[in-house]
Amino acid sequence: MYLIKRKRVFHETIFEMDIVAPRVAQYCEPGQFVIIRIDKDGERIPLTICDYDRELGTVTIAVQTMGASTYKLKDLNEGEYVHDFVGPLGQPSELVTDDIEEVRKKKILFVAGGLGTAPVYPQVKWLHEHGIDADVIVGAKNKDLIILEDEMKAVCGNLYITTDDGSYVRKGLVTEVIADLIEKEGKHYDLCVSIGPMIMMKFCVMTTKKYNIPTIVSMNPIMVDGTGMCGACRLTVGGEVKFACIDGPEFDGFEVDFDEAMERMKLYRTEEGRALLKYREGDTHHGGCGNCGGDR
Image (cartoon, helix red, strand yellow):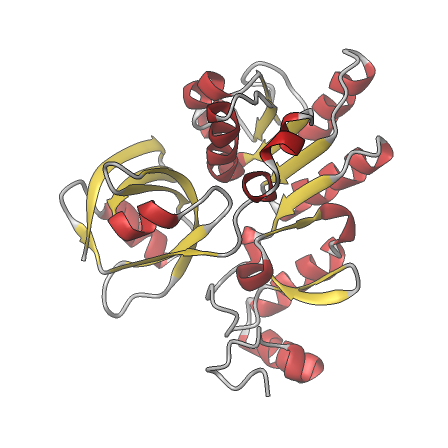
């Protein structure tokens, strides 16, 4: 059992929790994720790591209510427990694993959409702790859905906020902000990291490609089981089959087949769709976990 040490509600549909999980906190890095189960009969929920404190032994998760399990999680309060909290899983951000001196040479732009702000934050914070200040664009449908604003301001070089309805700071899409920074403010970037809804990342990549800015995207939105066993997060990257939960969740955005991934997401929602995908993809449907037989 894992204690909920702190809970903060951003919006009626978005909240964060600090979970006491010392072993996970000791080893996790920005870009990775955890799997949580609320009770012994609950479903597995993969969630990207929003923050961590190795001294306190806590890991912070940010959640948007979608289905029954996330609503059950939202109903829990400080002092209560979740049944399972497993991690860290997935691969850390390349910014963490690459040579730090090479990273220092880069001008980095982060683009966060909605809840994507949560996995962006630990990466920006890690860079800041190593003397590197990155620019950050945060976009959301409206002001109420902007999260972690003060926390992000404290660790980034410049924070640019935009809302679809114009209810806060400026009106427009994150792609418009990218264009304005480059064309109107003369900004130069060597790398972009984009995390958010699939459609946002797709158009972000289309925009950065025009400016020849290498772009990393996180495919955590398509993860379901988190172990490669279910086949949900199968995608094509550079013509090769990959699995977000095992090989990612971060990939070269220029190489990701977004249209295929989004179509798979639609099919995977129904039992018939899942059966069709399994039939079409055969031995490549699963992630080769070695346990479920999907790799044979």
